[in-house]
Image (spheres, rainbow, N blue to C red):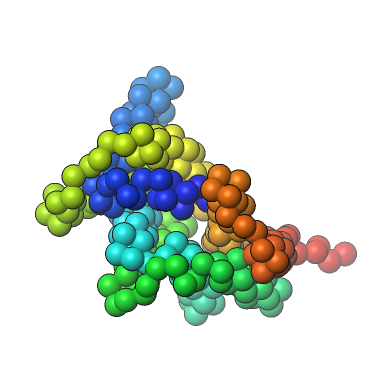
Length: 277
């Protein structure tokens, strides 16, 4: 999942965001259909399940990815966009606490959420000056944040367990139906089929969609929403390490401190509570 920002750095100069994502969704759908036909994976059996999967696809694929990529394309730095999207665990916890019911966020988890947010801020702080923030790209980034938060909560509440391959395919079809018209109507920049773009597209399909998105689907299906979303705090630190390895970007003391702080925060959130005797 963390390689998404690396892919954006490779692919963004050679393609408009919605067009790139439309190609990504279409290629991913083809790969999933081949996989499904080979293993005879079962499709959702009810119309309601198809509808719920379609809604999550529009939110978690079209809304989230479209918002982030469009914000970066509109001039926002990757560090700034990562920090804004990094608010997701806190936003999820606030929503669950407001709803009440069986979704309880403990004081330890609240401490972990805030500690993780502090760590993310430290990790991306050296890059916050890279790229300007304006009303357009800020709105796109906030829209992406709200979209993936709503999609996570919607899936946890409405989508019943089903095969991850067919579920992802339905989600991607819904995302393509939203993204393709936007690409055709709003974007006129041609695709430059540079080797970097081809590599970014291949990695986006095989690793990010077939791998990362499928794993996220399974995590949401099997775990508590707060614990799952807190893992998103690890994305900026992992991205910083990957950028250092691939692009030679420096890992300063602030970044290293942020990584350590983020890990401690995630541990507090996902650690199972101690069972009383």
